[in-house]
Amino acid sequence: MEEVQRRAYVHPGPSSLTLYTVINNRSGSGAHTALMISGSQRVLWDPAGSFRHPWAPERNDVLYGFNPNIQAVYEDYHARETFRIVRQSVTVSPEVAEKALRLAQEQGAAGQATCSITTTGILAQLQGFEGFPRSYFPVATMKAFAARTGDAGVTITDEDADDNHGVTFKVTRPPAPQG
Image (cartoon, rainbow, N blue to C red; front, side):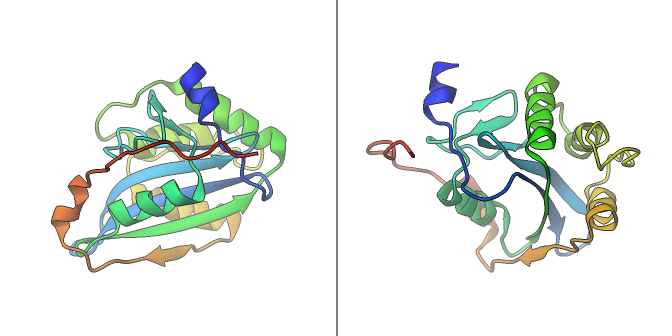
């Protein structure tokens, strides 16, 4: 836990939840769901995700230290010629953000193909998301989030070749601590 604490990042904006949906450009079907939680620290709940970054320690599908630079790498990692991302955000109370963080940490690592169902399970337990529909399908989750929050989202595209998915990082030294 010491490594996780050392890498904590606190975003200066209001507490928020940001839903990421990765969508196949050919079929229109959802490929992945993740939830960025910004409260006392900013993390990414990336259930059964393949993203790794040397400066974002991961414990049971929660990536810590999710600062704007790592967020940009995450988005670039997923957006490519065959996939786009829809990013939707909603401001929440600090209490809701903390509960989301706690639920993500308690969830434990998610099994393959359970990214959306585990994320909707977390959302359904939060104030303002009561009765949120549980779904295995990322696009259905994205639509339900839009209906609940009013945020249709921002679409992120990139024409990078598919082989950029296996990004390799060279680490020379960690970034300076924030704050």
